[in-house]
Amino acid sequence: MIKKLLLFFVFFSVLTANAQYTPVINSNRPGFSESPYSVGSGVYQFESSIFYRKINATPTFSNPEALGLNLFFRTSFISEKLEVNLNTSLQKDKIAFKNIFESSYNKTGLSQFSIGAKYLIYAPKYDDKSKEIRSWKARHSFDWKRWIPHIGISAGLNIGDFLTDYHKRDGFSPRVGLLLQNEFSDKLNVITNLHYDYIGTDFSQLSYIVTGTYNFNDYWSGFAEIQGIFEEYEKKTNIGAGAAYLFSENLQFNASLRANMKQDEIGLYTSLGVSYRLNRHQDKFVEIDEFGNKIEEGKQVKYDEDRNFFGRMFSKVGKLFSKKREQKVDLDISKNTDDDVLNQKPRRERQGSLVDVIAKEDKKLKKKTAKEEKKAAKKAQKKAEKEAKRKEKERLKLEKQIKKEQEKEAKEKEKERLKLEKEIKKLEEEIKKEEQKEKEDQEKDDN
Image 1 (cartoon, one colour):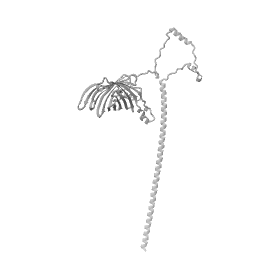
Image 2 (image 1 turned 180 degrees about the horizontal axis):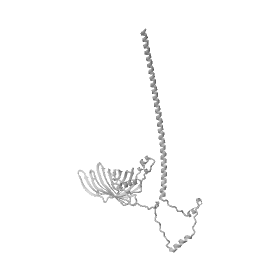
Image 3 (image 1 turned 90 degrees about the vertical axis):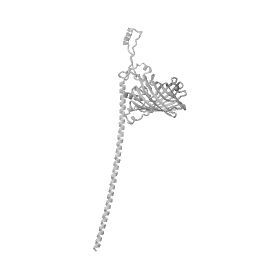
Image 4 (image 1 turned 120 degrees about the horizontal axis):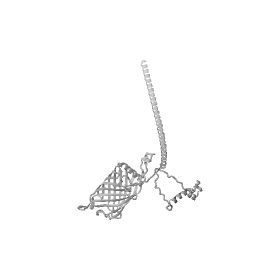
């Protein structure tokens, strides 16, 4: 059940631009970044985590260690694209003073309290490559439109009056952000956030977050994230990784581990979290008839209150004997004036049914498919003819090469034969000379 719902969510998160609600919980945790999508109307989502942070104490005052509970509440109403959220943290801080000696004390209270909203302003549409039947390469090639991100904007208000003294930042201060999300595949998503926080205070900061999420299967997913925070006198960098487990369509568990780099110190940040949503979302239904036409309630007939029962009855009887006006329509439109066209009684037309629309679309699709198949067959035939020509060319080339080799071999054999005959002739001449010499020597001995 969960597997089917998750596949449904992944499919519609890629193909739909207006629908925000998903059958499976869509949590931002365990990362710090925010997706441009809202949770959807009628959904109340709680994303909480227990975190622990530790870093070496720096000179003068610092906060080397903290243990806390974070709560991020999200809901949507008015518009599917609009989300309202609340972010707060209850934290126990270790406040340290380091000079020649080091001393510290603990303080517990709220370290963060802010309210905000975000709105999806643009969602690109990707090509459905599953309908591509002409080319396997085109069906499985990368869609370069996926480099175009989903775009959302966020705004909020930081409230510092509720916080402990160490975390106060001039009471009320606004913040704005740009939220981007690239869906490079059904498994890989990259979220980029740009934020300008604590605007108008002495602690204003610019920050960026880049998060890459990969779905290993229907239940497990992992993420890697880098965050940079730029303040007037300080720069912070967080590098982290983590995993999330989908327990059910409304419940997710997650964990993360991060390295905090602040000044020359490197610290540790770890968290364990859970995300839960209360789903009260309801889809809007439209009642249709067997032909797919919208059913509208019939209007009630209103009788003339000034007439009694007999007056209404005689008025209807009188209409039966009244002469009906004949409607004559001239088919020659050029002869009709504007007044004639206005006086003509409009014809009643039957509304097209869903069956007719489906049949028309099916006929159109069959025609398109037949055309594409014909084109593909023609292309395949051309390819086959080209391949046959290539094979014939190779065959002729091979025959020519074999013939050349045979001629060469025949020449070599003829050359060997001539050489052998020459040697035999030479040998015969030498034998004759020896016989002649022996004969002469014999004659000489006889004398």
